[in-house]
Length: 250
Image (cartoon, rainbow, N blue to C red; front, side, top):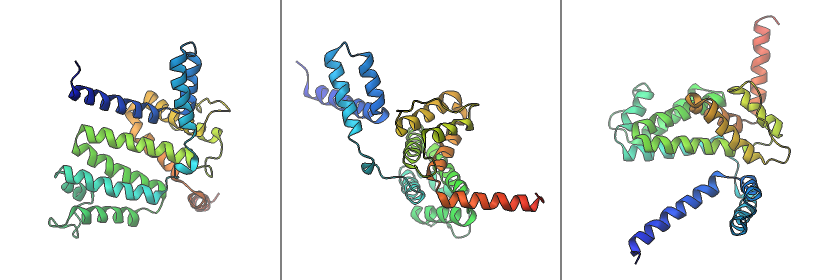
């Protein structure tokens, strides 16, 4: 007779596995699996349900990621990490350069706010802000331990996928998204005309993990930045480019 405790733990593991499966794969993935396993009717029906469920997740159910939301997420994560590991508080102070207004008696909330403000003041370009915030979050997660580091890395990759998927202004086509692969490989990522934006964004991350595992954090941050960019950022970049040309007499 199966014990209730074991049944419960098995159910938890099965639920977690199912949620992970749904989260990590797109409707296109389930449709492809259905085509391969179509001869097994019961399994094909399960795949159809998973495919339909993913397609019912409407775009309005997945709010676009903004820089402000990313900044707020970093704030919350830093505070939570510091609450589980006391070593993170001095790490953030050290990252700040032990500024005079971050006294040893300062709360972690105050220190984190000072770190975010420091980024706002020192860096005007969105790319620099995103890089510094991601760098601080990764540093704190490394101090917190391997499990936290893995969780934060996964979180940043999911944010990058969401940002790329939703940014139809700066990345209006699959072609423009596929071109991002040239940041770590010679050629754009091949894609199919009917492929979903989310699936392509997911494949970009997986491709970077496979081809440039030693640079995956840097690439993830770069892709997140691309997803968070807006027309104002493009205008700023263009103005700077023109100013540089003038400075060099071009």
